[in-house]
Length: 137
Length: 223
Image (cartoon, rainbow over all chains, first blue to last red):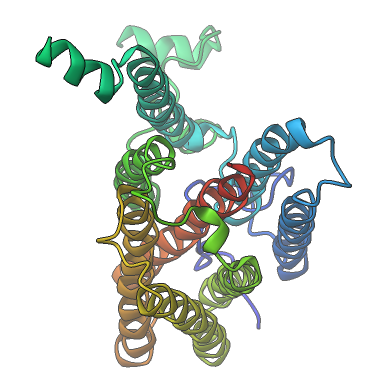
């Protein structure tokens, strides 16, 4: 597969820089790009395996499992963003990174906000039995 | 002679305010200088915004699942999920995402054969994922643990089902792309369409990371 540099256009990434860490100018070689995807696949597979493996209580201190799963999940999202979506800090990617940062803000507000509010509502709720007695009395 | 031109000529433009593509600087800097970004960058950005809005939609379902995980109406909790099935689904989607990346390498090099082969493999893994998910859902419903049983199961079926619907829509899109590359060639509009598809497909795998971590694995640790 030969490439005419004039015609070359990148595929599945949002910015110009194709391979994480590679020089941004000029079309990267097939070898370099392929290596990027394979590194991504291997990292993602290892982290996923670690997620499933950490469920075994003999591997990790039981109360720490949830935190380990969250960290491993975030690491996997990072691997996907860098090696598959090619999100970088290159100038033409700044808008994408900023949009992602805003998305993360909204997602955190919705997710952790819901958990926070609902936890306190549950904690402060009058049990149904007590409520019935109050009404009856 | 206007001021910016003379500044350029004498080289006194320390902040490169007046430079354009002809000065040897990069054509687009991300700071508005050097003219508008190429269309591919703009298309990718627009679709990235859509994907982020989709992620916000999913975050609501994730929040609902997490909040309702104890609302079981006397029914079962996350211990009913078969983690082996989940691991197989995860492997299918990860390999599918990887093959989608290989297809974009082929698209970048205008190789129709490799594009079609990589897209076919991408689609097969996606199809296997959907079949595993349907198998899981029908199994749960057959055991009486359908979405109508409890708020917990409703939240589960909504979140995972919504992701499944996205994957199904992605498969239809993938089939369309496989038909359009031979029919219309590697012209710009088709390549941009493929760029959007690949972003969508990779993003679905990112959502799935959240699902298998929060729904299945963290769910399993919840009493």
